[in-house]
Amino acid sequence: MKKVLVFTTLAALAAGATAQAETLRFGIDLNYPPFSKQGADGKPQGFDVDMIHALCAAMKTSCQVVPQDWDGLIPALNANKFDAILSSMQITPERQKAVDFTRKYYNIPSRVIGKAGTQVDQNTFKGKKIGVLRASTQEKFARDYWGKSGARIVAYSKSPESFLDLKAGRVDAVFVDGAVGDTEFLKTPNGKGYAFIGPNYSDAKYFGLGAGIAVKKGNKALVDRLNQAIDQIRKDGSYKKVQDKYFSFDVYGG
Image (cartoon, rainbow, N blue to C red; front, side, top):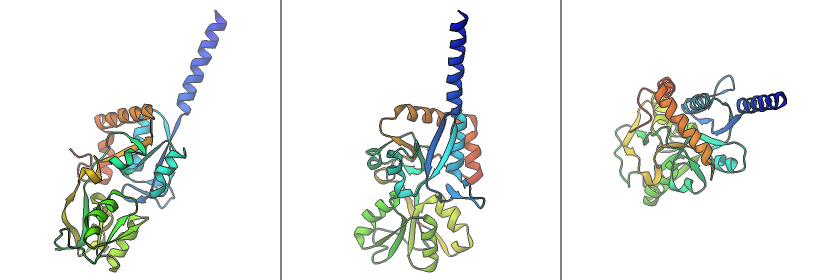
């Protein structure tokens, strides 16, 4: 009986140690402030980074942030370089063919930034250039909407590069996540004379149902754990604490 008891106790301890030792690896593009960037100290920071740590705390597991360029995120996930992608990735039908998603963890419309006062319709940018993030939902929409009307769509590997080119006059507008454009350009000295122009863009065909966390196809167990964690941090105030650090409005959306 003692041997059985000792074995059971050791097994329980081993199981507990395994649970404590679990580390979830999250792929993230660190070129998308204020959601993600590399700080002056070399460490990842931003809304998405803090969201990773909040979710891991809710799941009682450790986490590792794995930097990866945006257009390589899904291939790297499917090559097992990390367990999930938390990098402001919109839940779209096209991406759902390659990965599974949690429910949204935020939903912010996309906006066009251009010279203040510019009127926007489908033909506004005929013969002009619009900057977008490469492989983003904004790029897909811009090519289908303005590209077919004669606009040239210029794709960038990093969003800040598009703002520099807008200021320098190398592009005529930038189409971007509204929060990114607001905090990283319009509210900076470089944004003087520029504004959001035209309407909010949130067509579910292109922009999906908000930003979700992507995992490999068929990993329902991890999707369920992450969904439960999203629910928990929404209820216990952890989500709002992270949100209020970066934004003055509700980024979760209706």
